[in-house]
Length: 380
Picture (tube, helix red, strand yellow):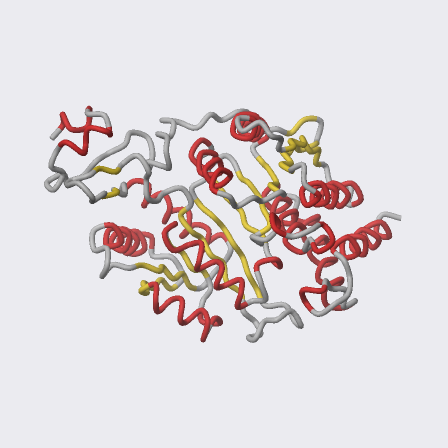
């Protein structure tokens, strides 16, 4: 079977693949369109003169410009030792993957403001996830009083595998009119993913980890996830509960009994809609942020998926502020992160300043200004 690995992918359609048990891709899970590199380029930490350098990706739209203004204004007023390297998306299609990738490699950290969800931008994002090996997506959602959450005291962290999936080049035609697509699952990358999940749970003192799967439908791939997860859990013997649950039961329980969950982990096949459902239960995606993490790089984003179709007058500030808080925690600036979170909650709950989406009459800019004004007072 070794000779099959040397064949070009386009020759797969000429052979019978029924008896191929494993197809390995050296160095990584195979990702959309291009083979990932065998290693991730890692540069020294980007902290010079006591300041962190962070890539700020924005766009030429009003959404991107206003979001970047929000972030820079918050960090300037808060006196946080962060300097932004701003990269603005332009009409050049090659600018985003190359220039942005090089910037994140230099700085190791990035905030991505101007989210676009057309196929071309999604494809570029998949390439970036491969090149930087951002293999885990982190989304933390929680109930906030008065913000459309039907259940109090909900606090869920979703940890999804971020750069594995269906692969556009690993496809072939066994008979005319039929196309089969392969998915590559490698044991070592499953172990790496669960190693991150379990250590994340231990580090943040979580009490329960739930893994969503479809082993009945995919006994080999999802079955391998379940087997490895249980073996690692029994070997580590951590102080938290671990359970396996079919994905349809998981989704139903998130809607009906969200308080039973602490950490939810799943593969990239189900992670996006699990995170969407969890955020919807807690009031909506525009309240929260997401983080794409690797061993050496991290990209922080608002979770909401409507930035690209809204106008600057209705831009939600909550996810942007939360992305800033996540960045500060990642950099180890815990005091700054705590102060910014407290001021955000004061604005949202105590002062009842909210956008129209949540029954208020205030703009996103006014929400940011209220936080900024109180931060200024703390420094005088």
